[in-house]
Length: 288
Figure 1 (tube, rainbow, N blue to C red):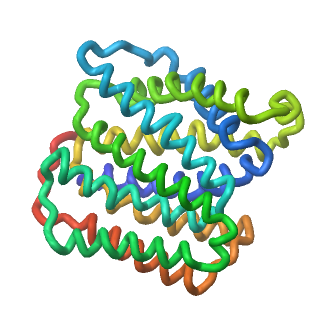
Figure 2 (cartoon, one colour):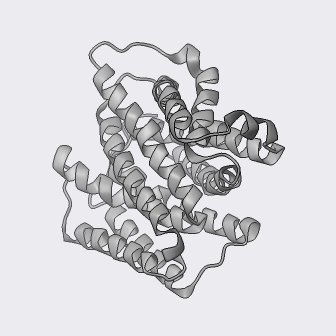
Figure 3 (cartoon, helix red, strand yellow):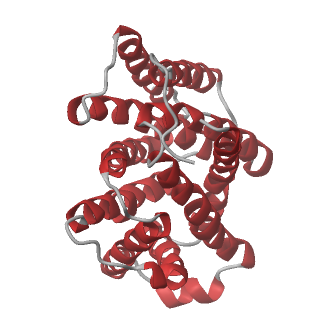
């Protein structure tokens, strides 16, 4: 990976590290489906000019849009609303071993015993976190985040295979598919929408704006850009700084308390994810 792309990946990690804290603030006011709908409506308004039909590839585009949009983010923001940002940051990294397992099945990427050990450690670490008495208070949120990681991993495999669909074109389709689905779900299962819109503070709107524009238009669009140039197992390890940034921000800004079991579980999980992500062969850069 070039130095420029490595620097870009570090910026993505920093953006994502703060995004969970920003989302948690907004989700203290907006219910999860409404918040997700607002996020994608904002993105549609900006990226609508990029919507373009891609003959022969629309099935893949729609699958990616569903995974990266209403399904993946629906589970994710439900998890953030019900859980602790520090825990969410670690558990969401299960997308790395999930993506690795799926890349073996569908992309025929080679995985040897060290990576299988890493996969085992990552799941053991999450189990250690999950059995912390503190986490029992928001275990449902953890389950939602695990489901989000699995769905996101499926989307990652399709992103790795698709060609000739631009970064912002893909983000536009994700938002275009997600916005009406999440809005319909919000009206069906949540209430007091207009009152929530009127009473939201600048900080709460700021969280929605940040997750829409910084997290998606820079973070997720950036990952899509890099996945078109590097293998899944090369890009995945470089996202490991994101949960570290989240823990720092959530402890400093939200007053999150980390127990010893949570710290130990996080170290086990992140060690396993790092092992999963270590390259076993040289990678040739395939794009600028």
